[in-house]
Structures are given as C-alpha cells and as structure tokens.
Amino acid sequence: LQIYFLNSRLRQLVEIQNGTETVIQDRTIYEDANIFAPNLHDMGLMSKRDFDNYYHFFQTLKALVQPPDLLIYLQASVPTLVGQIQKRGREYEENIRLDYLKKLNEYYNKWIGGYKEGKLLVIDVDQNKFAENEEDLGEIIRKVDGELYGLF
Picture: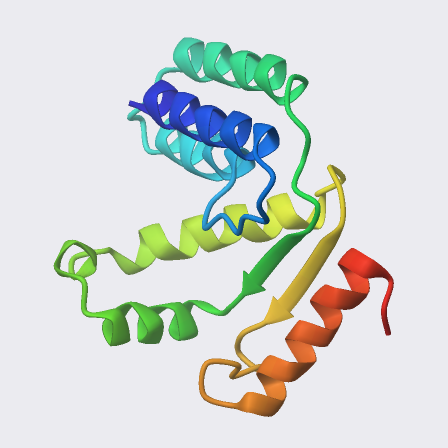
C-alpha cells in the first residue's frame, strides 16, 4: 500500500513539473517516506526488509524530481490537532487514537527539523489562527511571498 501512495505522489509531481500552473499540494512525497512508512514499521505493520526496500526506492525516486519551491509546514500541538480533527467532522477520522496522532506529530517534527530539500516556512498553528483571523492570514501571505519572490 505504501508503494501505491509513493507512486501516486510521484505521478502527481511529474504532472506538476510538466505543467505550467502554480500548484499547492496537501501532502508531499517526503511525508510518505519520512512519516507514514516509518510509523507503520514501528507499529510492526511493515517488516524491516520491506521498509528498507521502500526507503531505498524513495531515495531513487527523490533524485528524479525537483523539491517543492516552498514547503509550508503547519506545526501544531496534539491538542490543536485533535481540535482540528473534531472541527472537520470526518467520519473516518473519528477513531484516530491519541497515541497514534502523537507519534505522527513526533515524526513530522523530526522530519521538518532536518528538512534540507529546499525552502521551508514553518507556521505555528497553536499561535497563528489564520483560518479565523485576517491579520494572521495576511502575515502568512507576506511570508510566503517573501520566501518565493524575495519580497518583504
């Protein structure tokens, strides 16, 4: 299943790179390999051999595509994540275990702490309420413009 997700994201990247439009992706190829696959391995749902093969395959694919022009990471505490999940009200997210969410958050923070593929903008969602506050949203837009276009 992880290979399916990796292949799907790779196809998306190739389409994006061959296109001419600006695209915002919800998830990257890096997350599959650095968060979800290691977590499945830790949970005993992916063998060491399968994980190692998967990760080496990812490294090969990663060399074939360009990183995003800008990676925006919405960093949040577990309580904030739980609140957002509840607010969305998606049925398939209702039974996400707290320990699972905490582990994913740890993997995300570890990955983002070592991200060296390209430009990175970290938004603290615990402090920045851009969905409800136009000033916060405006500040994020200014930061994105600054990262992408060198504007203040």
